[in-house]
Image 1 (tube, rainbow, N blue to C red):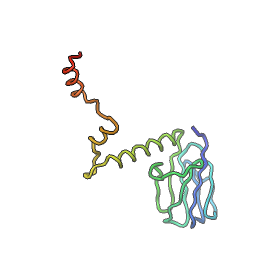
Image 2: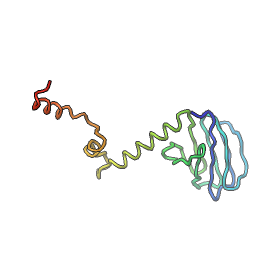
Image 3: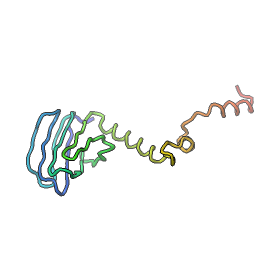
Image 4: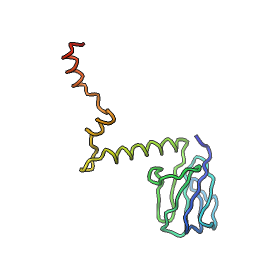
Length: 138
């Protein structure tokens, strides 16, 4: 549970930035394709120039997927909610997205039968009752 986060932002065209923590401007300036910032557990906004680029984000030496990290990406900035359980939430979001992708049927919904066959999601109480009845187990 980090109390302090190191955030690296990089892109080949990145030339300027503004760094906000809880809506307070902390620093701003020019940069040469990358910046490294330090932030406490907080809400962070990083504005970048030029607009309409998609910088790569590394948090504590780990490149994050902005979607999985729930980073709100705009054409001129991104917002990050840094919490003590940031990595646990990221990991859970990663697992959820993989499960949704793997078990999705052609109609866009999860294939419950495939999910059950692989994960064993259902308890199958009806099948258990039938087996117990055949075996005469109570």
